Image 1 (cartoon, one colour):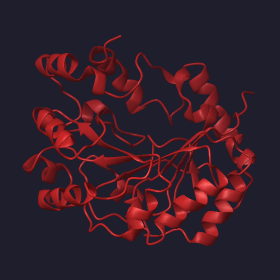
Image 2 (image 1 turned 180 degrees about the horizontal axis):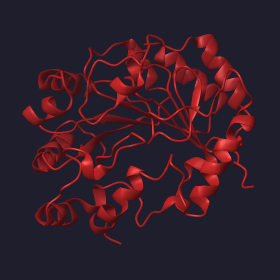
Image 3 (image 1 turned 30 degrees about the horizontal axis):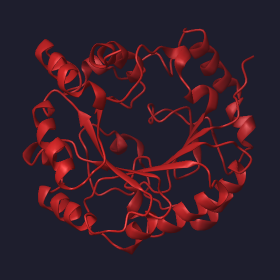
Image 4 (image 1 turned 30 degrees about the vertical axis):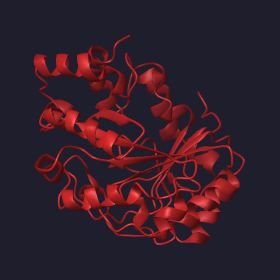
Length: 308
């Protein structure tokens, strides 16, 4: 039996409230009841995790993190427990900047601004976003004290918004965003394949070559990649706002493997179902949970895009 190793990577959702309905997000299929995690529950989570050697954490999920009214406190509490962990948060920038946002920057190491397209295409893929709201947010962020927080742009690439990348590259320069990060779009459902998902599959040879020649250094990911390379089943943890643990953040509509408020973490991560999933990945004989892994399907594309 292959046991789960100590947790070094944590993906923790503290709210599932969101102000957008992005075309590549499956939250409508997954989120049943809106919830902000209470600070009392958050402390319980941190107590459960405090002896784990967490090196990197993302405080996000299927909601907009900064819609949590106490998000700056959420970040501070995490850093109090894990002062050496690298903390990452993503935001859609579609709200009025406030003290909750500004205070959070004291504790966040890396902030992704999610911008996927320019003007019309941006609004198309992130409805009901407004380009004008994004620009207002970027104008405000120019004068905000960033502390030691790095602020970058995270761009989900699909076949339709490739043509806008150069415009967003200029936007990053204009607003002093540290990096343009390109992520090839994925599907987060267990029973769906990339080949059957609009806007994600079907890159032309010209588009592949364009991305490779101009943006290879900006494209994030690992290639080649196969199931035995998956860190989620070995050292990762993904928790929803209800405390439900799932195998990974790439399969958000699957049944949870346990609840952090009800069972010991070690018991959940070494349950029969989790062991079967982990063994399947280790042997490159994926279980049903992993057989349609979008990252596995993405690997051949990333191999073409990322210059070795």
